[in-house]
Image 1 (tube, rainbow, N blue to C red):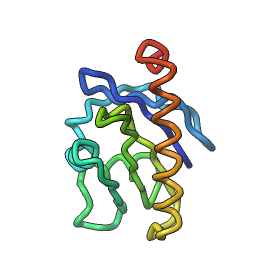
Image 2: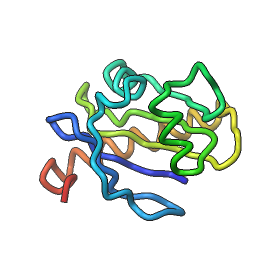
Image 3: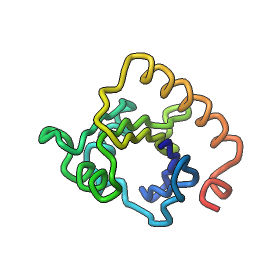
Image 4: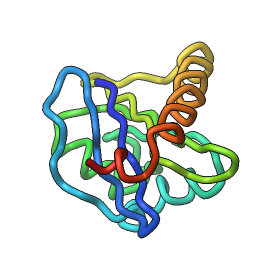
Length: 125
């Protein structure tokens, strides 16, 4: 599953599109997910697995709740401003490959330009 969530100026993540699943209507404060928050602030990617005790417990709980085993989070950043996250979730355990990571970064770069062009009011509509 691939999902895109926008990040508001107040730190709220809201999913705006998802493949293979309904869009999650809930809003989440990014600070509720410390590893994702740190990844977005640093502009780095995050990998989490439901059965990995070293993965962020909050991410693991969300994976378990939704029936996923592995997650790759890629920050969507435009000119240093975090706009959201791109998430790749898998129902079975998956170590994300170098090719997966390169593709995720490429898609996130394209998303950043698109989200910038549509503006904040359209990102949360």
